[in-house]
Image 1 (tube, rainbow, N blue to C red):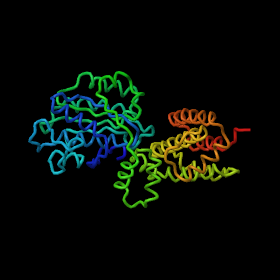
Image 2: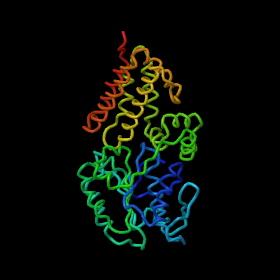
Image 3: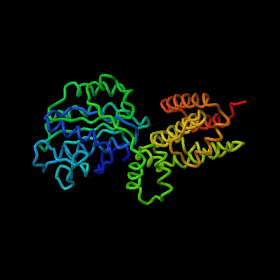
Length: 357
C-alpha cells in the first residue's frame, strides 16, 4: 500500500480501510452525479494512490451488467480481475488510463514536470478508446509546482464529458485554493495498528515478527511508508542514530557515516531523506511528550532508551522548539538541494548537546 504508482506497472491492490471513499464513488455513479475530479488526501503511505488505481479499474471495467457499476462489497466496490478493462489496467496498457508521476530518469528535482501536466489536456479531450470513461491519476500533487497547478486548471474548469481525474495529495493545504475548490475532497486517515500490521505482513511476508512489529510502530498507520523505511535503509539508520545519541560521548565518525547513507542526494535519495525527516520529527515529538508527562503512543525499545536520555538533556519546551525548528530547516534544506547528509550531522549533533544546566 505504498503511496506512489509507476506509470508502467499497475498491480491491482487489495485495499484495507478507506471504505468511505469507495462508498462515495459508488453512490456518485449510481446517482449519475460522478464528479470530474477527486482529491484524495491523507498521510503519505496509507494507500491513496493504490486506491485511486483500484477506482480507475472499477470505472474502466467492461463486463458489468449494472450500467451504474454499482457492484459492491460491504466496504465499497468489487472488481473482477478477469474483466477485459481491468486486465488492461493490470498490464498498464489501458488506452483510457493515464498515470502521471515523477519521471525516474533525468529528474533531479523529483517533481512532475509541467509538460507532463500539459499532455493531460489532449489525452482527456479524446473520446474514450473503449467507449467508457477516460481516467487520469496524478501521483502526486505534492510534486506539482505552481506552474503545473496553473496548467491543470483549464482541465478542472472545463472538464470533458466522461472523464474522471484522481489527484493524490499528502499536503493538500499547500495546493492553490483554485485547485482544491474544483475537486471533491476524500479525506483519509492512517490505519489502526492491527490493519497496518496486516498490510505490512501481506506486502513483506518473509520479514520476521519483530521486524514487522518495528515497521508497524514506525509507520504510524502508513504501511506504505513503513515499507519504504525498510527498503531504503532509513529504519536501520534511525536505530543506529538513536543508539549514538544515548552515548555520553558522541562518535562523530560513526554519525557522519550514518548520515551519509541517510541523506543521499538527488531523486534517488528522496525516499531516504523523507524517511529521515519523518523519523527524527517523530523522535523529537515523542521526547517533548515524554518530558511533559504525557502518555506515549507505541514506541520501539530503542526509542524508549533515547527518549529517556534526551529528556535528561533538554526541557520539554526546548524539545518542542527543536522539533519545530528541525521541520522547517529540513524542508528548506531539501528544497534548496543542500547537502542533506551534512545537515543531518549538524542536527543530530545539536540533539546530543545538552541544553539543561
